Length: 511
Image 1 (cartoon, rainbow, N blue to C red):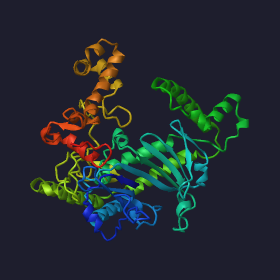
Image 2 (cartoon, rainbow, N blue to C red):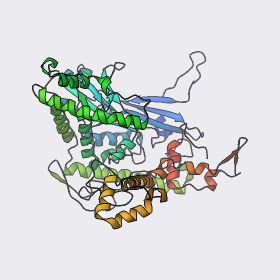
Image 3 (cartoon, rainbow, N blue to C red):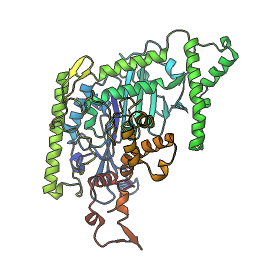
């Protein structure tokens, strides 16, 4: 299930962590003078690393935490066993009680999810036959104690390794054929683009996300290209042999980083056709089982087992979220009446983040029914009704027939509106087409409408701090006007949230 996590601005007082008996913060000291060489302090506890970094504006410390929440649940020993939804709840509960962390306003920056599966064949069959993933070769990282194969994209990393080999000495009962398959999310926008709403530590308990995470993990594994050792090239025709030799060559799938967007798109189409031919050849000539599909099936089964949630656990999760949310609401109310409790003072809780995803379970939620492994889930168990159609988050139009986890109206949907609902199409064109774009052909119009609908949502969110900068005039090192910009500009909630996220980093905006 979930494993590694990273939070760059943990919602907890640095003073609270400093007196926590399980944390021993240390820094780097000069061997000559004994003076502290850096203000950054580090402490480790059961698989988690806490770091205290002074904020650039001099108002206390920013608290970071990173590490394996699975290993933390196992007292820091290992993360080779099953880590279920019930274990996850217990681990988060322990985090809250041990360190006074507020999971509602602790925003996740990275997260890992995956499974450990027992294979009916050696793990080496999977690892030694890795070729590429989406045009990128797998790299064997030998720096860690357990070598692992990974393929890194801009937003996430795909990792596979022999989990049994890693912990066989610690857990003698582990299977020799224990494979770890995981995805490490580097940019949380990747999950948002797949329809997964995961922003805070508390969001890890959103049951409605679990099915989406499982589908994404299986889809990622099935998109990996493998070699097939049971195929004898000598038995293939000359054309088939050429397809096979290219397919099993990682360099054949690589795309140069210096390609322009148009060049990359032109190169990608032939690669898609080549991949289709290669997979068809493997299906025709392999001997024995399709072990990639067999492994994907085991991933599905294990994910369903780990995320199985019964009524009792759902009630417990709901109760915990209500407790944490009520604590956050009380803190926010108290901070409004007492400014000393805001993050402008050293060692206090960070300001509530308005970008919080909204797990407020004491509010009525639209009634719906859903099925989770054969059991009915109560109406208040998930964040959104699974039976309601998916709708574009800008226009509200039904986009259920669009493939994937799209959030906006697509070009093909706009084209269908032109063919079947001209009134709606004309309304969209009148609002989302410029005069120049309206003179283009129909295909271009549909493209621009879909593109501008997406931009209507994303553009104001890309850099909410940018609008503040135009109010700050710098002349010869002096900032004008005389009053601080933060007092005269009156930022919106979204801008304040963006300022809070940047605080203590090199992107902080000094207002």
